Structures are given as C-alpha cells and as structure tokens.
Length: 262
Image 1 (cartoon, rainbow, N blue to C red):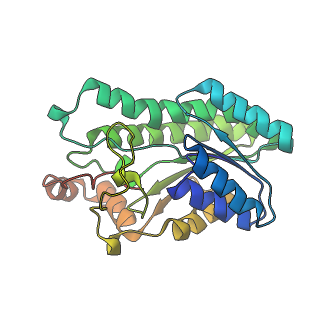
Image 2: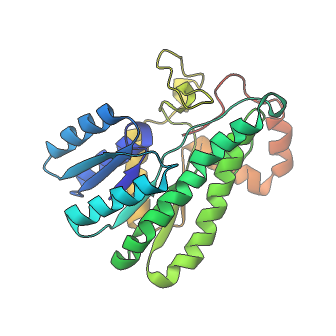
Image 3: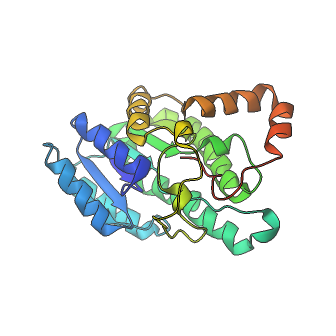
C-alpha cells in the first residue's frame, strides 16, 4: 500500500494499521526525518517499508514514487491520497492566494495522486482511498477554504467510483471528524507550530490509531464512504435531513484554528 502525507496523523496511523496486517508500505510525505523514523519502526515489525520525500503538488515526484513502488514490489494494491492541510479565517480576510494554496494541495494534490496511481491499481484491481472530511459535508464559518477543498474531494470520489468500477478498482472516501492530529497546529501556509494548543477539547477528539483501524476495515470491504467519530456522523446526518437547523447552529462559528477536522 502507498500513502501520501504519511509522516504524521492519519497517514502514519494507517501505515501502522496496514503493517500490522502484514502489508508492505510505501510512505510519501515532505518531512524526510519523520518518514525515515516511521519506515524503521515498521520494518522492525517484519514488513517491508520504503519511503520517498514527495510534495503532492509535484506530479513528477509522485510518478517517480509509483515507479519505485512497482520496481520494488511488482504491484500496487492500495493507494491512499491523504496529504492535506487546513486554511482558516473569514472569507474577507483570506486572499486568492490562500484559496489557491489550499486547493493546490488538497484538491490538485489528490488529483496528482489519482493520476499517478490509478494505472497500477487497474492492473491489480486495487483500492483507491481519498481522505476527505466531515467539513466536506458541513461548511462552518471561518472554514470556507478547507471546506471547499473537501467538498471537491467528495465530488471527485463520487465521480471516480463510477468511472473506475468497470476496471475493478474500488473508491473509498474517508470523512473524519475531529481527530488528535497536528492539522490545527498548521498555519495557513502549511507550517507546523508544535507549541500551539489544540483548540478542540480532548473529549471531542478521536485517537488516530483507533480511527485507522476503522478505516482499514472499510477499505478492505471496499465501502463507498466511511464517516469517522460520533459527532462527525451526527453532523453529516443533520446536514442531510435537517439543513436548516445546521445552518442556524453553525452561523455562530468556531473561533481560532479549530475549524479543520481530521
């Protein structure tokens, strides 16, 4: 299996979950030292793990990583487009560059991952996984850029599911709610600030390792979509069946960098 954004959070948790199942893993991300450490950890469990420093906005880097995967393992069974970050702030204070930066990683980075991996997945009748968000179902104030990008990922997953079905490739959309990851410690330019306190209370966040176990089951079963966390499922349900109530609730918004989920 190959995963982008593998150096932390959902990506690292999924890599560990699949390694426990005996899968060989290909780790892609921008933070080289973290990738090396994770690969060493996984190799110690008895699986094979390779890593490559990759920026998903660069299609050529993804193509090289897939070529390396096929050279090493001979096939690709699962590809997970996970890399992403969150831009937060009121629309009137964000710039066009903020929105472009958000879409470059969260939308075009996903598309690059799809284009790079689908030919190999068609050969193996494999599984393509896109990491969306509950924010791709429910848009909150101060969250327009991130929500727009995740709504786009949800639309892409829906279209791809039909397009790839004849090839034997399944498409699974994972839509997490709040998890205990670094996403809310990353600023609008993608820089991590480890000292920043997560504004989402701990009782509302799910551990990414626990979430990854549920994701793994959904991927193996080729489910169309999995919504993670109880509050996430409730938010998605209400957005579908009581949109007026959701609108009246979310107009008050969230403060700080608490908006992006996952």
